[in-house]
Amino acid sequence: MSERSFMQDETIQSYLDALGHHSPTPGGGAAAALTLAQSCALYCMALNVTFRDLDQPIPLSTSVSPVMKGQAKSVRDVVHKIEDFRWEFIVMGNKDMAVFTKLMDAYQRPKSTEKAKAARQKQIQKQTMAALDVSLQMAKLGVDVVTWGQYAVYLAKPNIISDSAIATELLVTGVKCALINAKINLKSLDDVDKRQQKSVEIQLIEDKLLPSTNPLREYCQNLLG
Image 1 (cartoon, rainbow, N blue to C red):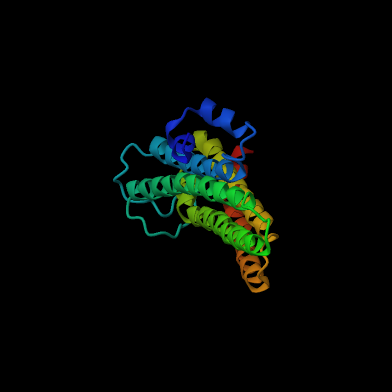
Image 2: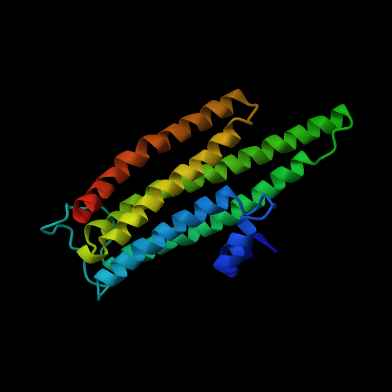
């Protein structure tokens, strides 16, 4: 079964069966990607339920919501943007599985001679870096969603604010999960300079995540009571 089928073509039950199997893929990276994709889907649902006409201009300020910053001219622009994010997370879930398979293959390479050991280690480092980059890309994209997800929080009908709240919690969780994968791969990097560089990137994402999402979480919590 290909990586594509896990993330796009199979049923939820088939995916969960594969996730719980002894095979290393799909694994945590795919789960993080799916969590982020679900966040996007819920944000879109909140907007679709709230607005009968998606082509209407964005109400940037209402009696219950703050002024929001963004590049959208209509609700449809927001929905399309968030749908694009959702697709990208699925693509990244596929990438995560593909690169992790290559990493496992690298560990299986022969090491009977010094030359073979060196070639094996070089390939391990290459695929470790690739896996780390996928996780970082996923986490960064998750933070980018906040700019657009805020519309689904601040403009959602009060009776579906729980869906927007869950979408936001899934977003935070998905980014944190992607960073967990990044950190475990970071530990396996031999290159000190690269390890330091990626460590800084991880910290920058962590520094942005809660400050950008906490206002949305607090707004939802106030409405939920």
